[in-house]
Amino acid sequence: MNKQAKLYRWDDLPIEEVKTGLGRRIITGERMMITHVYLDKDSVVPWHSHDNEQLTYVLSGALRFWLGDNGEQEVVVHEGEVLFIPSHLPHKAVALEDTLDVDIFCPPRQDWLDGTDAYLR
Image (cartoon, rainbow, N blue to C red; front, side, top):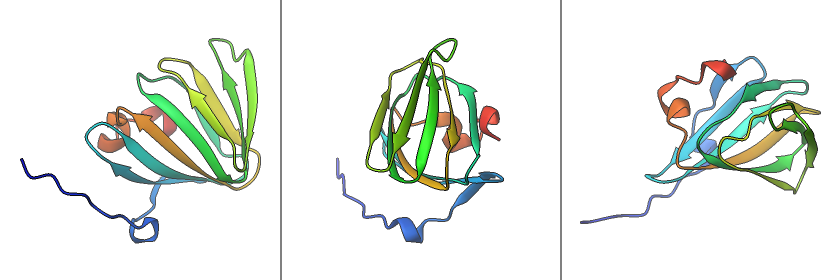
């Protein structure tokens, strides 16, 4: 089996406009996915959960998360901070300012790849 590495440049990838105020770029392998997510101030990521483990690393801006069945855990993730979200933990977020974050998923988010992520659109 001949496996090869592949180099990506974020600026070469198109931004998918998921909805007004929220766009993303996706790079995926067989067992992991990394994304740039661009959120305008006050943009909302609605309540959802997924089988995938998630790391959210804020490069610029800030995101307020509510986590748990009833949003009992509230966390603000600032520039330079990383939030780990385990599998199946319900969560939602709002951008407190214009924000760029890196989301890493394992395994890849199939709903993001095939466009069945209706909760987000």
